[in-house]
Amino acid sequence: MKFPENLPITARVIDIANAIDANQVIIVAGETGSGKTTQLPKICLAMGRAVDGYIGCTQPRRIAATSVAARVAEELETELGDVVGYKVRFNDRIKRSSYVKFMTDGILLAEIQGDPMLRGYDTIIIDEAHERSLNIDFLLGFLKQLVPVRPELRVIVSSATLETERFAMFFGGAPVIEVSGRTYPVDVLYRPPREDEADLADAVANTVNEITELDPRGDVLVFLPGEREIRESVSELEQRALPHTVVLPLYARLSAAEQQRVFQLLPQRRVVLATNVAETSLTIAAAAEGGAGDQRRRDLAHDPGDRVRRRRGGRPREPVQRADGRHAAPRRAGVEGERRSAQGPLRAHRQRGVLPALRGAGLHRATRAHRSGDQAGRARRRDPAHEGAPPRRHRDVPVPRPAPEAGRR
Image (cartoon, rainbow, N blue to C red):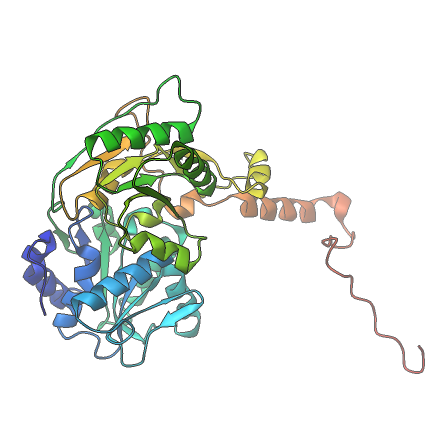
């Protein structure tokens, strides 16, 4: 088994293997570009794991699962779907003879229903744990209860920016292995929006022009909150007609064929406008951080107008967060620094360094609308004025009618 010498994680391969052998749960923390996502499954495979089940590696997004699986299969010099495969929604490229299985965290959650003990796996890697989505939080809680029941199971929690002490305490003092930083240095330039810039799309287009002056040949990756901002920025950049440049959008709802255009080698310079799906799936020369994030936070009880925004296809935009003392924007700088020195991210934010802290777990960020509805329902049932009243039904749900008596039409 070969490990790339230019990746920082290669220097810790033996330490990680010994920790996996001696502990059921380990935590691997290191910045983006250290090689955790691609090399951790290979370390487990080199140890002789995947004998009694798959080496399962979860990713928060489909494009990350498919692209990383293809990369690991290429490093192992095997066909995708043979030794290494992936399973995402509507697409399954895994065999019974496979050893490494990449998948979204939602796929693993769905498999728990049919296999509560997860007997199909002997090693589970939870990657990108810093995102703390609902799926990741549920998986971490479930695995904590599963580990004492299955002593042969190994769990690896991996993240770019992670509160290692809290995670170690959660898993009963699990060992923490720190991996050194990025492969190449990244210059971080702060670029506040100008007064003459009408909107985010105008600021993005001007920032791309400024990056072009610094490096007219290198590709550019722009992080934006959502599809609407991507479409507006694409339109603005196409109007400016940058020479020898192709503008490519990248977000989860695009078809697989459209997403793969981003990974194709083109003679022109690429300007990729993406949501956070590009954090673990794309390496590029320079990045621009829009300075706002699309938060899946829907608190209808406190913000009734959010229901209207959701119907119009939008969600509240909030500033990029800090995570464990590091900004989310500099964490994305590792996307550029994986292959060579780079400039980025150029971040359109008025106050440098004034960023909100990480807003907690996905369970805490989830909507309280359902809880509010349940409380209202319980209060209604306790109300004496409603005693004996028939239960309320949705207008679209048909009211069941009694069956006709025998002999009657």
